[in-house]
Image (cartoon, rainbow, N blue to C red; front, side, top):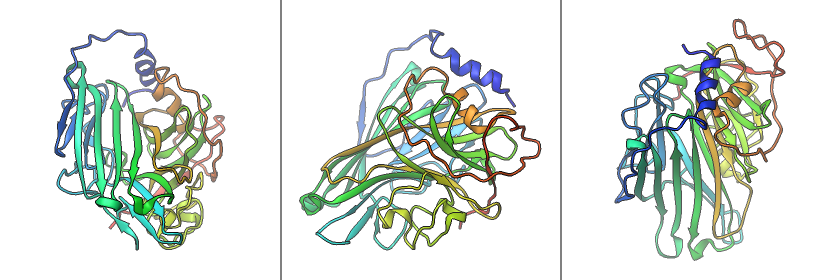
Length: 357
């Protein structure tokens, strides 16, 4: 177990220590294959994150374990959704309530992305770089395309996600739509943890999951120019329902937030037991032919720190991006036993999780 002081030192030192930069590899475009950044990393506390990406899904290797459900799986280039991290375009069209949830894992109006191509540009001997998945749904006048881009700099414990709606077929011209991204957290193989959300001491909007032993966070972090909404709760809240605020931070009907074309509620689940947990973000409602959102994802280790200060320490000074997000959270106070949170001004919800069927 590394100390928070050590973690913060590593993060803060990234901007000031000059790494030996290897020549970058040329961008390689593939018909749709598994792409990896830092393929030999993610094995211990100091060799960064390993990022496996295919079909708009991602698995994060850190300290020898997968961080999203299920930790033993990596994305499958032959099919969408086997690792539970979902880029979704939900839209209504035709002058009525007709809806598609493109990329959602289930739901009355859910459809999967049909295909993708991929490209990667690696630097620093393959330890840093970008991966882009070009996603497609439908054809002709119903064609929808989107880009899912992962950007990582070794040995950071965070990376950036950019999700772009790049075109809508004429069938959906003027359709109201939102972009969503959500996942099922796995906390380094642990099925229990706390959920949290709010504003860090460094004025950053974050939301995610915090392990019961006080050592790990998985979290979204708002980036400059964005005003994304978020939730932290049962990972089925975005697409299934019906759930109450106990599970989702707000009541949601059958079909979840996406089927209602609703913004995530900027709040966390209030349950104290028997709930699986995940987190996600949603964009503003739009009728434009193109749209975009981007955010950071943090997978960090801290000791004897509350999650909000931990998020600041994990990011360090490298991003240098001012927060412009929603500064709101719904949280429930409770004693956290051995996790020393007194005096930091944050309240959390303990989650005793069950495995998702």
